[in-house]
Length: 208
Image 1 (cartoon, helix red, strand yellow):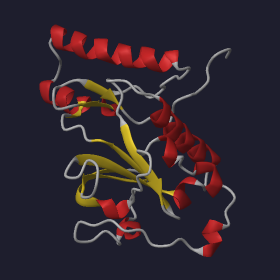
Image 2 (cartoon, one colour):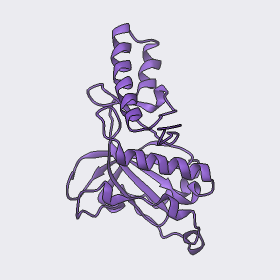
Image 3 (cartoon, helix red, strand yellow):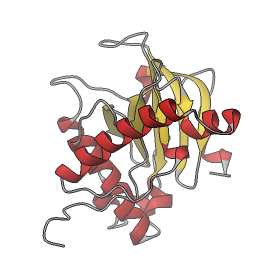
Image 4 (cartoon, rainbow, N blue to C red):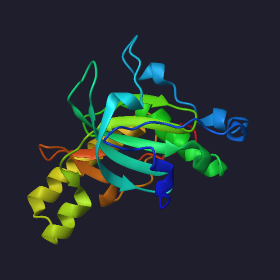
């Protein structure tokens, strides 16, 4: 996202959320992208932006930014996560963007695999959606490929085998990934593959 003004409320490492305008809240498309936090967050645990300390920006795109954050309260206090912050007002302008956001939300809620990026918490304010994902310190596979030029055969087989297992798991859930590229494959601290970015996935493929 090019407009950093929408993140001007991020200061001194804390993330807050301004109230949305009344005209925005009347938008009927907003309801379509509400998060079902109860399916993700631990029972009886309320989580919000104030529970996380901003460390740095990891990336940005058309809908928002991804921050490296540290949880400062309760369960997982002190643990590092990746916080994906999405602007509802930007998403609801286009039905396709709304569908992509819903698909990513649904898949992250439903799919659990050692080779797919895990969603730990989810919550929202009037104007933003927050997805708290595991922080993957190994970076993008693209970065490693660019640095090496090419992978040795045994390394390529290792990565491919884990990617295949991840895709097979998605297919068993009736999901087609549709956005496989090195930029969407992250590595954890042990060098294992984690698929991320599920906005272009197609769900419920049985019978198609």
